Amino acid sequence: MQLVSYLNEGRDQLALLVDNMLYDMDRLHGDLPGSMGMFLNYWEDVAPLATVIEQKIRNDKFKNDIAISIDEVEILAPVPHPTSCRDGYAFRQHVAAARRNRKVDMIAEFNKYPIFYFTNNNSVQGPGNIYCMPDHFEKLDFELEAAIVINKPGRNIKAADADAYIAGLMIMNDMSARRLQMEEMLLNLGPAKGKDFSTAIGPKLVTLDELQQFEVACKEGHTGKAWNLAMKCSVNKIQVSAGNLADMDWTFAEIIERVSYGVTIMPGDIIGSGTVGTGCFLELNGTGKLNNSSYEEQWLKENDVVELEIDALGKLSNTMVKEENDFSLLAIKKNLK
Image 1 (cartoon, helix red, strand yellow):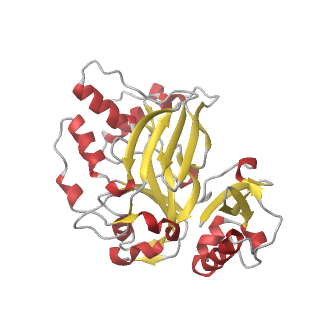
Image 2: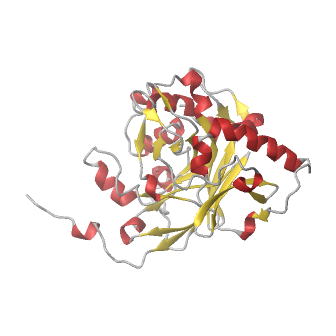
């Protein structure tokens, strides 16, 4: 299935996407909820029913006049109100390149366990404008990623069992204000204001059954599903990045195992893959300067349009917009003794 949330009379409406047409879930059957939050909470009951109805629609055996074109509505994040949002660090290529560009050795711990951090679930958004403060435009960056959403509660989940907790995949852009991030990381606590202003996901959630044809073996020594899905990013219609989801070293299943240790994960929790190799300007600029001392850095600017595409998951488009506010955290830094 392909699931979309859109704005309908001031609220988020869950719809089934079939051949570019949207079918409101709660109008398809009385037992189907009209929001993604409720759908995820009752996933094991409602997902099979929705799958049956989808097949009837495709076979022209479901008569209705409720379908509307996806082009006629305002698309929201597929999961408009996530219960939490974590982001992983799963691609060796990205980690190794970033460390090489800083002239430091590859960190040995990458091979020992998957790592993640919490970002702001209240700043998750879908396609459209991303509103940025002045400090955000100080080395503003995209991150090309995929993400999953959890479909049932679980605790202390083994990696071998973890794929059953994944509702589906979607595109994720972990927006990053690198100047703020770089200053914060000097205190060794993790990203805060450099990461918490926007995480874009969408434009749809694609369930795992629809991705079976793309499944491949995960990396040697790892456990869990992997998918051969090409990934790319364009800025103002110029491609700047390309990768593949199959290049994840740590699988989503292994990240879930780590996340759920001693913790109950819940339906609606989002987990990102981390940045694919070449999947951000921070890495690309570092590599460019390493190879050419006169390389000119590129960062996102006001009115830039960022488009992330992943095979089978669609295209996520966002425009960088300056907020009408000149307040700056960088300008009020103290210099206390």
